[in-house]
Image 1 (spheres, one colour):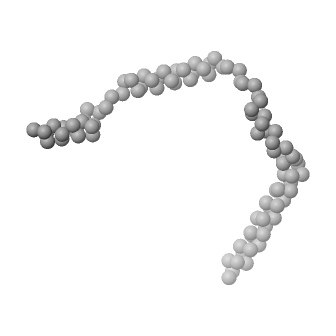
Image 2: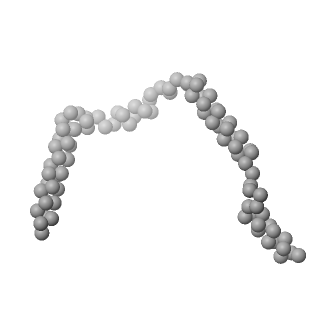
Image 3: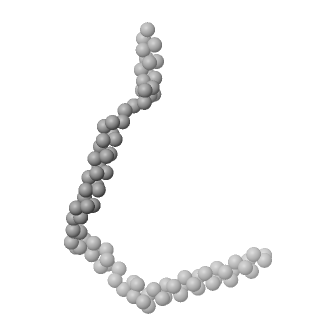
Length: 91
């Protein structure tokens, strides 16, 4: 029963804190215009192309392509093991 005496005032204080924060946000205009920011991103002009950024992306893409071309299966992969078993079964 002692824990209730601690948790009840603590929860009321927490609820009061959230209520004060909400009232402060409303009074400072936080909720005045909720629609414009969502639509603004649709009408903003495209950012200027940064040649340095573009070259970095190209370098990353090239390195990824090179990695995929040079990587091979391990010498004894599960696919090879299955093929070995099938060859033994055929003989």
